Length: 52
Image (cartoon, rainbow, N blue to C red; front, side, top):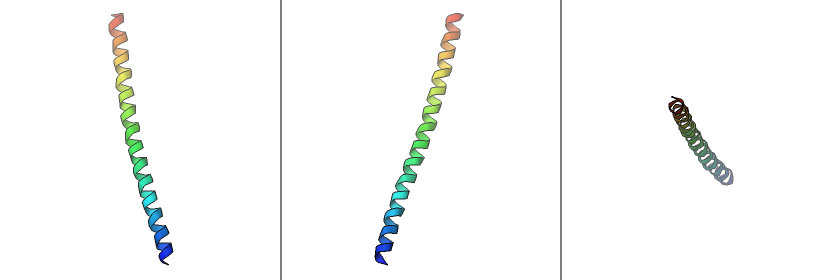
């Protein structure tokens, strides 16, 4: 019974860490998306200014 509890504890810790990693990766993806969006907007603005 103690062995089973140990295995479940290890699994719980493992899945907790994996969940945290997934959350961090999701947050980084959102940040990267907004940075790309801002860079794209800046690039379009520069092209518009150079034409004008």
